[in-house]
Image (cartoon, rainbow, N blue to C red; front, side, top):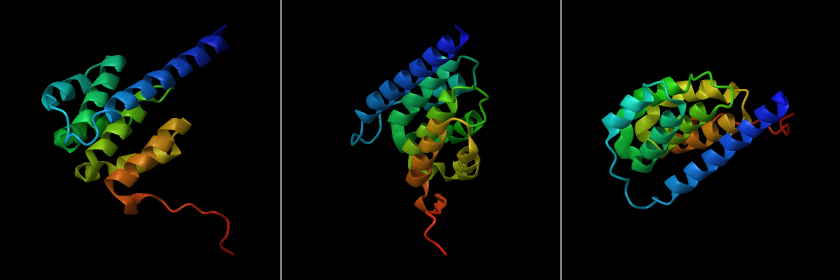
Length: 144
């Protein structure tokens, strides 16, 4: 039963993340949503995981206008949650902020060794959005 619960919780996390990305993606091209960044940062500094995930989604909708949230988002990259949802959403939001989140690049690079594959994938996408030169080169085995 423990195994089922663990897998079910993981599936729920993936579905929630996909829905949040879909909602955030609906705002593309609008120049960023109006978001009270300081209120969302206060939520990021709280204890409620679901509220943190929601705040990340809202800040992601705001895009580069949420740049003041970068220090709080960097702090979330060290979240210890096993499912990685908070780390993944923080990485996503930093990518949505774009080049104004350049201070996060060193912390994002540390996530490339994360045990959760989805966190690593989102981290690579975010690094590419923030600073394409920061994405590590992949060895395809063709060098001899």
